[in-house]
Length: 251
Image 1: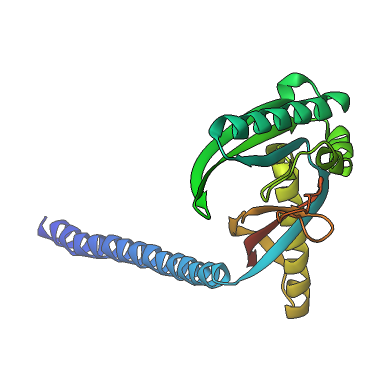
Image 2: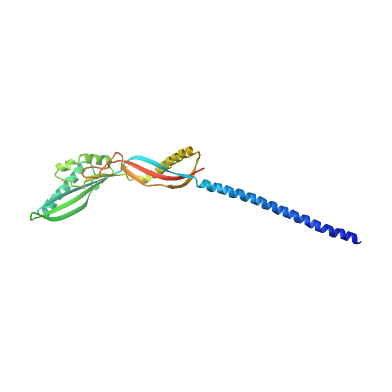
């Protein structure tokens, strides 16, 4: 009766030993798989990090010719006399001539308004004198009519109006916000073309945008000098320009 008990006690340790071995092998297998996956992810992460460092910075240009939609003409004139009343009367006469000039050209009365007056007194060889200076400003969206007025400005001189320094037409383009989005898109497209050429030369390809800077919009005369000096009128024909800086990923 004692022998069966002895066989049972011999089998138990062997069974437990096999089960422990299987558990160890399973744990070792899981650990090995984990090491393999971790190594792959680490290696792949390093590759991605290395690729992320590969980029090229280029600039894109967009230009567009536009026509100004606002004309502003400041007419500066003055009169000097021995007394203030006479100087003021002379300036009033010039103001009426200026209003008549623009009225004859077809500008509405509301387009013209006085924008400044200055009175000074000085002594000329012991004789006291007064000078009255005034500015009249025309503001119009009729660009063609404004251009015609500039061509005939000498008629004001014939009417006895002496134009001072600071008189001149200025043209402004006020619709920049309407053309900003398409121009930025054009500049970005131009930048990508430059990046693609660089990538082609270096045996890579262009990826997504890493960072970008829009840059500043510039509005200058389309054909050289935009005026601004005495006796020189501005031009309504403008060139809008923007340069964007874009950093592209390379892959």
